[in-house]
Image 1 (tube, rainbow, N blue to C red):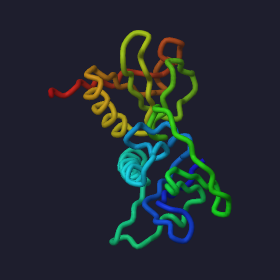
Image 2 (cartoon, rainbow, N blue to C red):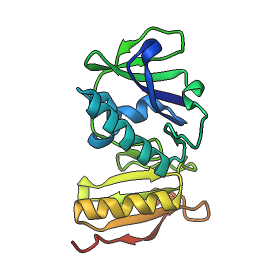
Image 3 (cartoon, one colour):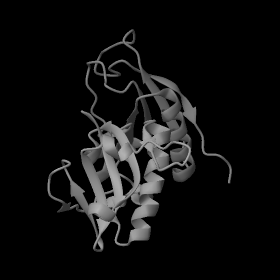
Image 4 (cartoon, helix red, strand yellow):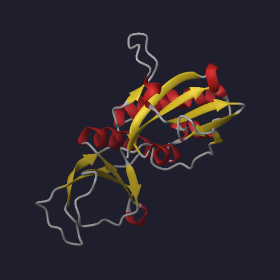
Length: 198
C-alpha cells in the first residue's frame, strides 16, 4: 500500500522535520536499507541525519518520491505522513499513526535498499511479475536476482553493482510473448553491464 513516512530529529513540538518519502511498504523497505542509507541503525543524531539524507537521495533516484525541506518549496510534506521516524534520546523511534505512541524502532539487516528493488532467491513464477526488469549478479549457485520497476533504475543499479562487485551483471526483462516454460518463465536477456575500469 502506498503511504508516506516522515523523518524528524526530536519528538513533540520541537521536532525538526528533515524529510519524507512516499512508496509501498515503507517499513519493510527501511528494514532492508543498506548501511549508508539506514536511519534505523543510527546511534547519533548526526548519523541519523546523514542516513536520512542519503536515503532521500537514493529513494528519489529509484522511486521518485522523496521530499526534503527546501526554501524554494514551502510545502511541508510531513503533513502527508501518518508513519513517522525520529531520532531522540539517543535512539530511533517510530510512530505508526499521527495520534499513536512513539515506540523504539529497531535496527535492520542489510538486504535490498528500496521498494523499487525486491531481492529474492532464484525461484521464479509463471505469472506476470510486479516488476518487469531485473538483474542477475554472481555466478553458479550464489547468484542473486533483483527486480526493478523501470529499465533506467535497473540500469543505474546494474552499473553500481558491477563496479562494486567487479563482475558482469546480466540484464533481463519480462515479456509476455516469450516462452512461459520452467526454463525462462518469460524472462529474456536484455544485455550485460561490465564494471568500469578503475
